[in-house]
Length: 496
Image (cartoon, rainbow, N blue to C red):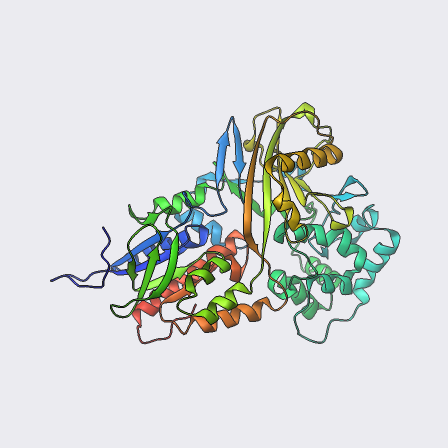
């Protein structure tokens, strides 16, 4: 049973206790890193993870049914950012890493009710090759000429934040934004490019403008420098060759993190009501709804910003107000399976995204058994359909029957799907995707400054430093390192 004070027993030192609130990926990575580092330094440390759900993993979980591997959240992660891959290796998961099938590494975009391939080499908003763009039916000749004119557009002289939509319109034109960039970016952030910050979401593209004068110039300069392999076929849309998953599903990662912690380190069904300063000395008091208060030397909050705000209201209303200023979007993921003969489309790609201009009722659909053939039995099709987001928030309120009817209609019209599915699973993510709107970086900086006024209080998670799994891992590990440094130097000011 956990003690509720910092009393020291005779002849031995009671280990510092750290409470991590949130058992999603961020919280589990923080706990794992703390244990790794404390063990290496032979420093006594007790880590307790509290999560409101009845399982660990947050938005990441895997369900296996009837030979299908159903993903309730992310189905893969990118490897050009090394942090998630390095973590998998340290967890001895390297032998479970699987790559995407190289046969159909491309994606589609809905165009005039049908499906057209995203031009080869068009990565989110950078046309790395011009001929495929010129040959594509997605853009009109007017749109193609405007895109080509990007090479003549001077670089922006001011460094102020800019919306993603404004950046793309200015560099590539409105048609490229509406027909290509908006659906591709919407598939990542479930957001509206008119509100998203280019600096917070895709800073590499504004950096390309600053360094090279434009996106086309940057792409050709990099190709001339040998960064693209000669003769290599480039994937369209996302860089699918850089994506990997785990053989038993992405839920393996949080499960492995939890299993690597000492027994009793993770408590599920533990809703935290409030965080306050400890009455017994330096430190914090964490008050769960279903148990006695827990005293801790340090606290790490990894939940959604609005949940963190609720817990921190008593100790710092100003910080809570700043956290509530981070908006969130809700979405629905539908795993749905069919026999192969029920689907007319050849499914010769990894998925399809739907531009808002097409007025569809889905954001995207992933062909999971094409992307990872291990995910479905032979002769079947496993699709993941995304609904809602910041651009269609009203669809999140559909009941399950209405969701399935919407999915059936959309898949019938876009992919020629007929008949009843073999199985379905609906996963709802309420207010789970933070929106990096204009001014996000300044907002996060202000939150960090305010949180730093409270020694040994730390905030991390996808609300602040990136929504991808590798970014999440990097931020969580950096937070754990900062926490250990603060414990080792109690006179210093903690940084969130």
